[in-house]
Length: 160
Image 1 (cartoon, helix red, strand yellow):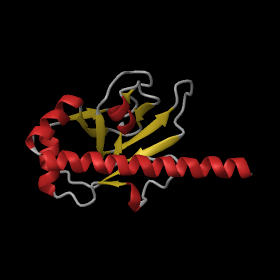
Image 2: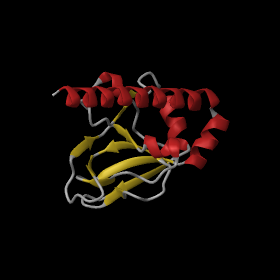
Image 3: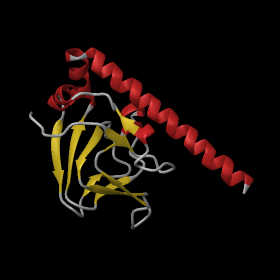
Image 4: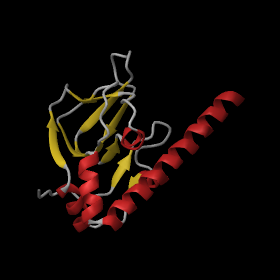
């Protein structure tokens, strides 16, 4: 698969600004690194108004949003509480823990994503173990950052 897209990708965190440099995923990855990642993934296009992922579904894929915007909607809500613009990474929690999706991601605009499922990641790990390891380390860093931000939000709410 050839792709004109190159990183970095920001990981969405509702407690953070989406343009936070701390949330960039693999900011030092080269165009060649991204080409390797994308060669083990599939490109999907989702039309505006359709869901990219549904809350409750069991899907462990990681999604790199390369074009467009998605709205994040909780299971019982009819409208999005947050919009995530490309370039961003979504789906990292289910990628790690294998639990059902906690939110629905609806395409606000036409969206292009690169979907890396568990099988694709296993192939990537075999082909480029250092790159796969760097991805895991960086996703763990971002998840830790998100947990720290969530802890701060909770602490602020308790002191208010």
